Image (cartoon, rainbow, N blue to C red):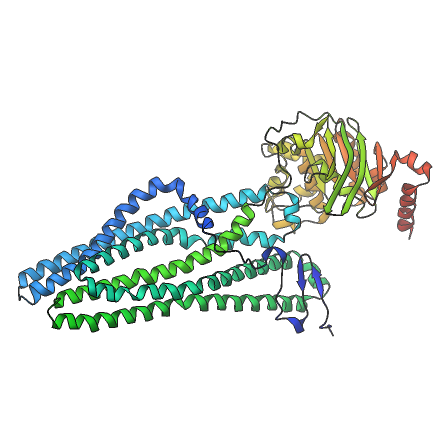
Length: 615
């Protein structure tokens, strides 16, 4: 029986027991924001409309003026039709008025239809630009950014949060202008027709805005909570899909379902709360409109009785009042739309404002073709402040040397190669290649000369050919196949259903782990790097294949530097230098034979490996 008091940690998530299933789940980056309403966010969003203002403004202005003028003119014509034609019993004049109104309705419909279609096209272009800028920015962020966030949390910013802005850009901004023009026109006409009656009706508007103002902060926080919970659900879904094998292997399906149920229930409640607050705007406007309508007919009927206004004018007032509350209602909905957009835009611009920790200098130089003199100069590095992963590492590498990094898990092996690729910057010290401090060179000129093969190989959706060619996109098919042959991947590839054109699924699930590593090896070799990094690259390859790869490496690594992280003796014994790391420090350094003769840490590691293989 599963203990209900159990607590389980999963990445940044705190997963509570069933007895606490209503407790709020907190992930640090998605905590509810309590900042004041920031209008600069809207100005920043409006900046995405600037490239299209020359296309947008002429069409919108013409269509907006046509739509507004026709809508404002129709009640006046109706008033005249009643007073002059209907009450005057003039059938011909009535036909003229009716015909004119029908023409105006047609113009209004055509103008609004064209405007809506045109603004929707522009709005989609704006959303396209915003999503592209966000994705482009995320691609440039440093590893530290992704270390702190689940993939699903990043995904929801690019999808859900950007989608939440579509209504604002496709309809909202233009409707706001139209409604403001229409409201202004109606108020002016009402005041001109009868100042006292207009004032009596419009007096209810400030009361409505006062009440709606009190709802503003509550609605905004409610939508922030919705976006936050949706982000958590997306992050958990991504984690659950990626880790489904582990979940089923440890029979944790029910526990995972319970956890998702908690999150899903919390999302439902937060959505219901936001919608309930949103829906309060409609009744508020309806009540205000009802009060205004009551004032109109109560006070208006008295004015008609006293001959202060005509029946036609009262009907015109009624039509204008109907048209008056319609844009007020839309403005209320627009305000809700803005609040939703604010909640999403804050989350989008939070990412957009994130600065890469690893940045190029403005005057960064292009790293010349690497000769291979590499130096780690008294390197200190911390993933977390106060917990150094490397402590004063100094290492000199000559041209064409192969360096094997060995040590226990967490000793700093991968950290060293991460600094060499400048995925991170050291807290203190320098990493130099051919005398160039890596912080002084352009990132693309560095990384284009470094090839990496990792233990956890990533295979993209696409063909085998595409995955290998990812190392150098301009490579020919013949060059791709030559790289595959060099690492002995060709034999298994040609046995697949469509050979090099076989479609592989996301992460290459149809391939064995060893096959995926061979593809990754071919990808790195195709890039023809000056420095090659093998991070446990042969861990999942069988011994027979590894022997073939070792033969290929003798030719492929000639004249270039290599850094090899491995536990297998066969992989590291031929390295020019073996660097033994322990808790972020270099304990020993030398060739295989030299270190064995020293009877030190390396000797102990080798003996432990032999005992393991013999057991």
